Length: 317
Image 1 (cartoon, rainbow, N blue to C red):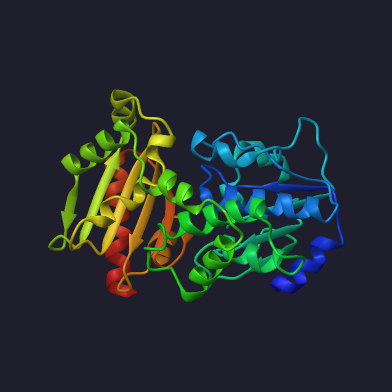
Image 2 (cartoon, rainbow, N blue to C red; image 1 turned 90 degrees about the vertical axis):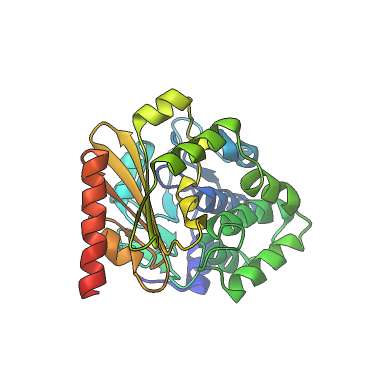
């Protein structure tokens, strides 16, 4: 069943015993939404926890607090946030395949895997959807507003990506008015890089491939690169945004080798190419301007596959 934000707020008020799921390789949007929802449900007097995610990096450690579920917690209600399909469940969430009661999301490619779905595909971040839902209950406190600000700011590249809308800024302003330390969030996530991260960016520049007079840029990060540079997941956070900063680039593709024979691809585009259509040809999806997929094969095979998908969408739409 499809629910509006108002209906989702009422639905959540009527239940208890919550476990909140985040997606594999979690970003600030899924983590921030999960934490804010957990805290808000507790303020309503509900029992609520976030399922620990084995992929979460230390970058988000300051925000978890006591929200993580203890071992053996048995939920009555399972909610997912910012998850478009069951293929994005981390291993820790595999026991909940087919058991999600409500999915809250902003991805137009959502597969409808949950019993109920609250989807606002015009929102830049799931954090905007959560803000609308939680605001039905009470004015947000700073402890809820901070993770939601993380959600909204990270999914918009500190409000620089093309998905940023007037509503995004309105929500961010409302969150800032609660008194959160947003300069610290901005510094941590957008103005601080490890030495290893800078070396990774250097390696990307060295191996960058350009097509169509430099409007398409393709970068790859191999397991060998990560091993040589001793890179961690935290060092690689949001690396897909890097090559899009290159002047003249309209389509940026980042290929990351996750395991031998498995590559994760991120595609970011301008209005002339639909990234979701490109990635859907390879079993993925997302937004028109930012999507992803997984290719089983070598990095070179992934390059061939993604360029073939780009050419197909360019030719046929």
